Length: 272
Image (cartoon, rainbow, N blue to C red; front, top):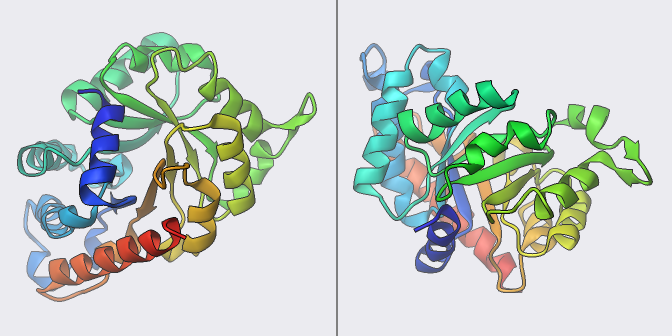
């Protein structure tokens, strides 16, 4: 089964567009986990187990693990996710982008070392920096397009031959870059007008949509802008608002409640 097939199946079986971001910050962990050698794994695994029923995907952010020298815990976490929740795709948020030879090693890292179903990449160095990832025909790739941060304006809104740079990226990714049908785009919920424009340009291409929750993106506007005709097509990511919904020993239950609420809010708007 390819990543796209797995994702489509999950949209239907879970009736969810919610992607649960796993961005572990040990300074915000419950007191009973602090000091444990495996605290990052334990925290993320508990969150994932509690929220899996409401998620169309999980998205661990590699920097949060690497900065804590916890790459081994990321490996263990993804192995746990695939063993305990094999129906839920795992998108490794790595935002890699380098020349072809180096990109090949990053692809091995994402897909062989960590075993992710999909990865996020930067398009800045062009198609040949993405092709090594496309060699893994059953995996997915989300290319940065219109990101949720304000600084994205510095480059993404520049005009290039009569269109914005983010529009050019969208057309390339939906067009001849996507020879294997593996590609999607990252488009922030904080820019619903641009999200709607990307959807108009790319048809049914899957969109990873960060920016709701702590970043303030509007759920209703995002869903209406980015959904496909069948009410799917999106992985709407929420990280901190779910991860840190509770701070005590019941943190996982609080995360489950936040995830359920977010999924239900998304579903209210996708059916209108």
